[in-house]
Image (cartoon, rainbow, N blue to C red; front, top):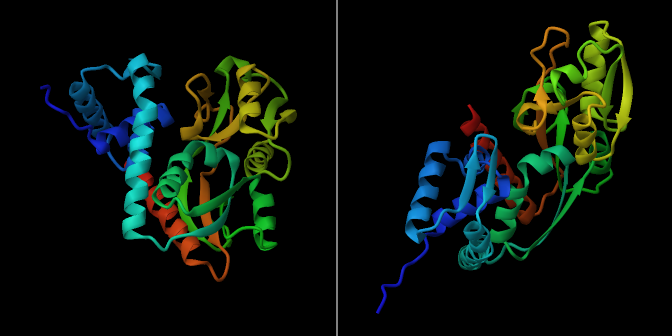
Length: 292
């Protein structure tokens, strides 16, 4: 009779996180582990099942057919594990929480954080709204959110807990796509937008002529316009896709201040909302520590 083998849930969580983030580095940030530890865990899982799960090149990472086959069952096992623990250890966590987040930050850093909370607390109903920061602040003050993650200037008096800080960079398809062009073509979000204001203020302060070349309401639309060579935009450094080029160090462009994300909370938070607040703050703090 063949010996039965058990899959290691910790290794499966590492595998699923890499598949979701498409990066060993970002998976390590999300899980609070070093990249070398992540690599070792995947090697252990591949040795355990005798299959290669990822196809890796210097510029890309993708699932092998065996990895694709494992992904669905792995997610199911993790959901069952997290739901069972939540039911046993925290059976009282339930209710709704309304969270507002900037789209770009939500896309880059929050999917895994929120998914982990939802899987651990299946009776909690998350309502997540993505919008521009200034709109989020208006909606927060109107009582639309229990919690909101918002961009702010590092020295801003806005109340809240700082949970993230990251350098901003100029981004283009390549250096030749924008350098030497006058006025500089900018790809931006509609007003009000913190990054748009940051870019315009920096260029005005250095006497650099500019024009709005493309306005997009979505991050995907902005990135597509940049990739097409229509202009340059401003992004947090870690959000620059491999196909684009960060050119913030070029002498022809002014430096940009860091972006800062604060977590603000409404008065009289429910216990459920407090749990989500603490979960987000802890998860992002771990990710910050791994980046240093």
